[in-house]
Amino acid sequence: MIFVATNLTYFLANAFLKPASNYLSRRPPIPQEQIDRSLGQYNLNPQVSIFHRWWHWLTQILLHWDWGRSPTGDSVNSEIVYRALISGQLVLASTILSIVIGVALGVFTAARQYKVSDRAWQGLSVITFNTPSAVAALAVVLVTISINQHSGHTWLPVASAQSPSAAGFWGVAASRAQHAILPTISLTIISYASYHLLQRSLLLDTINSDFVRTARAKGLTRNQAIRRHGLRTSLIPVATQVAFAMPALFTGAVITETVFAWHGMGQYFVQTISQNDVHGAVAVAAFGALMTAIGAILADIVVVVLDPRIRVS
Image (cartoon, rainbow, N blue to C red; front, side, top):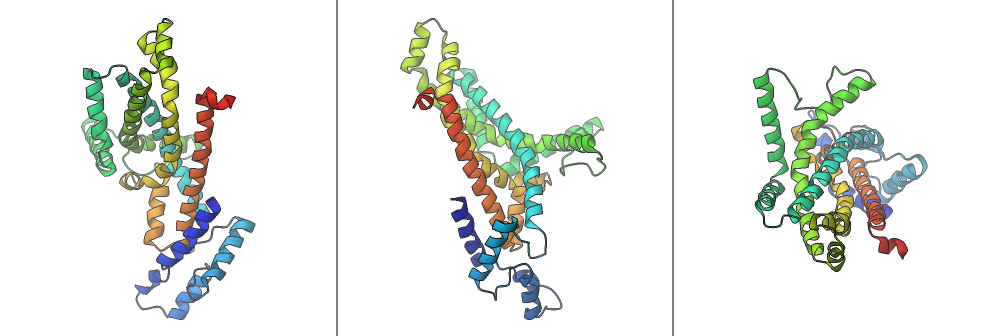
């Protein structure tokens, strides 16, 4: 499926993206022969048959793992590796926080159904769930700037992935960790609510199940029965959702990366489209397909771990 999706995307990208248009606005105008020559060295010459370009592109990947170059000559391999590492810092931290906070709130509110705390947390989660990512990111930035100005010290930086003055392994690591705090908070704010509301709904469906009532009949309190027995079953759909949400997190954090000036996969995806970068767009699609496949495998593994019936079968 990854192979089919990637090759289909190659033909679609060549149909809609026109690398030659990057040269048309230059002054003085560049002769068409020169444009074709420049694009030809990157296997992007539209005068060459699409099937000939596709075969050359495919063999370069299969034999040399070379995903090609952009119309400006930049290596797609280097860009993908760098952008994936940048986005990975945000995705990993925000995903873990979103899951922990969302599931914890789901258990907390389900055990207190219709009480004041349940209503309050539900209301807050509904608000954050419907908050646009741009609004959440800008709100975090404005609050941080206000704190920094009132304290007279820059406690948290609001832009870029690291400080230009950072040097050495530990210095760069510390700088990156400090710069990742705000975008991680921003992504967590807009992500945790879906896990909270889903976990609460699923847990309420299992609270009155036979196995939960049996656990309570054996002496467990309601909260103990929910945590030990009801939670395990209701976590399965949540785990599946997390696994399949990973690709979207890598390429979908465009707004957050733009606000905080992080050059990650989301920003690179938009850049490939705006710059008519066929090879870059296809590589991003392939990365998303790979992450989806990995997510599917992880979802199956998590289901096996959580559900003893599947392990037995």
